[in-house]
Length: 125
Image (cartoon, rainbow, N blue to C red; front, side):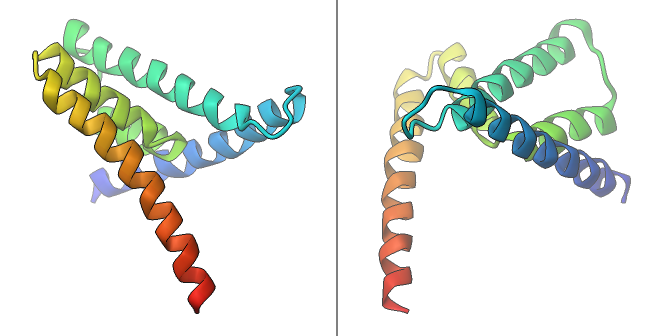
């Protein structure tokens, strides 16, 4: 049960942080529609996930519950893009370049196609 609480509480905090930061960046950017808030959240989430995973791998910091709280909870609630970024990095680090490219293409292309399909399906209902 403690794993679920760590992820749930972390996810709540990460979602609140995403809402606040994305909105703040978007309000203060000189954008004519470009989603700078989302970009800021995604890049910061990737940076933070890389940092946390690096601390775990190189310095053996954080026990299992803290890792779950920070990675899947806080950063997962903040942005799942950080997980996508890390998984792609891990494939490249392990010399799985074709799999890394397939992961990028699969997530980005099929993600946009799925959003488009969902949008059209909503028009039918």
